[in-house]
Length: 112
Length: 113
Image (cartoon, each protein chain N blue to C red):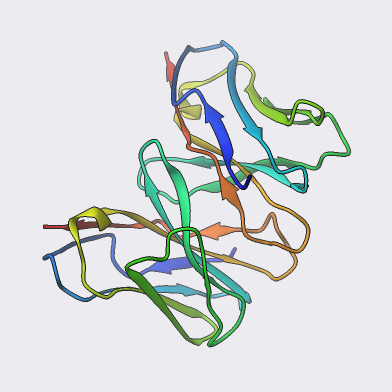
């Protein structure tokens, strides 16, 4: 019940395309859903996050879509650029827990 | 900006050695975490600490222990290193009550031979 399942494991997108990464969870007590971005040789860094009271959150080219009934959320990267090539992790947490449960990670490659 | 510094970028240790991984944060954060990162498995929580001398087991604590004698420092200890502990280890800190605010270090890549 504490798991977050992420797919795909790897993704190749052409420059200018849309990158989509999906996550699913079981625990309905989860109420924070962040995405982290990790470049080679670096630790993950917070990219964008959403709470379940909204269905979508957009920051620049990055959008989280959230489907509470399906217990799924996804990251969309519009106009993908080679600089977006990184590993992306979804995560989830619940009120009072503070610790994050991470998905398995998606290695995204944007071809120029 | 919060900085989380992990003392070693790469380590190579022998099976059976006692290994210490050090992590220091400079923003007076209450919460600190140790994760390991493996391909296809994501980030898995080993141990975390909410305060000095406090520790709690995460999802995969077997073979590990931790020490937090000072607020800024959180050490991960491999009591007797084994080859299945070869991995990337990530330390993170977090201001209490701010679930978004994980700040990670750059990681220590440990190889046990």
